[in-house]
Amino acid sequence: MSLLFSTRSASAPIDAPEAILRGIAPDGGLYTPAAFPRINPSELAGKSFLDISAEILSSYLDGYTSEEIKECVRLAYSDKFDDTAITPIKEAGGLHFLELFHGPTAAFKDIALSILPFLMTKAAGKKGLGKDIVILTATSGDTGSSAMRGFMDVEGTRVLAFYPESGISPIQKAQMTTIGGSNTLACGVTGNFDSTQTMVKRIFNEIPREFCEKNNLVLSSANSINFGRLAPQIVYYYSAYIQLVERGVMKMGEKASFCVPTGNFGDILAGYFAKLSGLPIDKLICASNRNNVLTEFFNTGAYDKNRPFFTTSSPSMDILVSSNLERLLYHALGNSPDSARNLMEKLAETGSYQLPPEALASIKGTFQAGFCNEEQTKRAIKEVFLDTGYLMDPHTAVARHVARSLSDCSSDCSKVPCVVLSTASPFKFPSTVLEALGAAVPASVPAQLQKLQDISHAGCPDSLKAAASKAIRFHDVVAPEHMMAYVMKMEAKR
Ligand SMILES: *Cc1c(COP(=O)(O)O)cnc(C)c1O
Image (cartoon, rainbow, N blue to C red; front, side, top):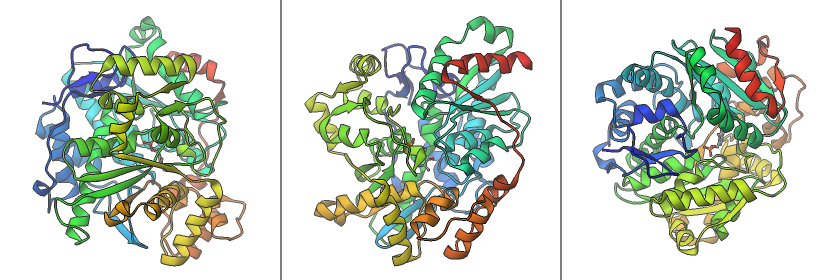
C-alpha cells in the first residue's frame, strides 16, 4: 500500500488517482508517499522498459489496477520513442550517460508526460469526474512542449503552458508556439520561471470556485509537483541500474551513483525515491548551473533565494525555488508535515530558511552537490566531443562537469560507477553547442541544426526540425499579474 500524504498537514491520506487529479494539495503541500514500496532490481533484470515501468508504477500508484497501469504504459511508450530501450545508456570517457531524450519533444520530461495524460484520464473515469481537466503548467522550457504534446487531443483535457518570454531557447519556444492540437494553448509571461511558477501555484489555490463550476472544468498540474510526474521517473533509475549490470559494469547489488542536472528537483527526487525503495544507490549528485541555490543548501543547510537570478545556457535549470525540495525536507525531517510547513512558510515570508543540523547530516549521507559556470559548461561540451565523439546538451554538460569535479576530489565516488542523466538532445540548443565547439553559428535555426548535424554526425530528432520550420500559432504574452485573468478569459471564450 502506498497512499499519499500532503507534505503540509496530517490530513487523511489519499490514493494515487485522487492525487494525480488534484496536482497540489488543498493546503498548498505536495503529495508524497507515506511509505515506500520495496522493489528489488534483481526481480526486474532481463525485463523490458515497459515491463519494468508497469511493475514499478503498480507498486507506487495505489488505486489503479495493474491492468490499468499496463494499458497506460503501453499507450505511453510503445510507439512514441525513437529508441526501443526508451532510456538507453551510452558510455563515453568513463561516464555512463543515461539518455532520457528519445521521446516526442527530445527532453527527459517526455518520459513522465507521455504517461501522465493516460493516468489522469483513467483517474477521471474512476472518480466519475465528468469535467474537463485543464492542465495548467509553468515551464522553464521543456515541460510546456512536453505537456502540450502529451495531452494534445486527449479527450476531456485541455492544456495551457505559461513560459517566461525571454530565457528559453528559440527551439523550445517554437515547439510550444507551433504545436498542433485542438486543446493546446501557450502564452509567454514577462517574468522569469520563478514568478511564472509562483503565479501558477496561486491560480490553483485562488481561482474562483464558481468559475470552474460554471464552465464544468477542473484545473490540474503537469508540473513535477504532481505525483503522477514523479512516479514514472523512478523507473529509469531502475532501468539504468539494470543496464549497467547487464553490461558487466557492476554486479547486481553493488552501488551506483547518479549525477542529475537539477532545476525543480523533480528528476533527482525520483532517484531518492528509488533509493528509498531499495535500489542500491550510493550518491545522488545534484548539479546546478550558476543559479546554485541548491549547491549552497546541500553544503550548508541554508536555503536562500534572495540572490541574483542568472539566465544561462541551461535554461531548464534557471530556478531559485525548487518545488520538489519540499518533499525531500518532509522525508528528511521524519515525515513531519509541521516541520516541512514551517520551513515553507519561512521561505514564503523571508525567502530563506535554515535546515536543522541533524537533518542536514542525514541528507548528506546521500546527496552531494556542485555547480558549473557558463565557461565550464561550454568547455565540457567541447572536451567530451573532442575526446569521445559524444555530443552533450548544455544541461547534461553541467552534470558531467560536476560529476567530474566531485569524483576527482573524492576517491570514494570514483570507485562507484557514475551515471550522468542526459536530459535533452543537444539539438535543442544548437547555437550554444555550436559555439562551444568553436563553430560559427548560422542565423536561422534550421541552418544551425543542419550544421550541428554535419559537424557531429549525430542525428537531429525529426520533431525539432519540424518545429523550427512551422508557422507560429500562439502569440500572446502577459505580465505575471495578468495570468489569472488570462486563464479565465480562455475558458469564457470556449
Ligand atoms: C526540466 C529539466 C531539467 C531539470 O529537471 P528538474 O526535475 O526540474 O530538476 C534538467 N534538464 C532539462 C533538459 C530539463 O528539461
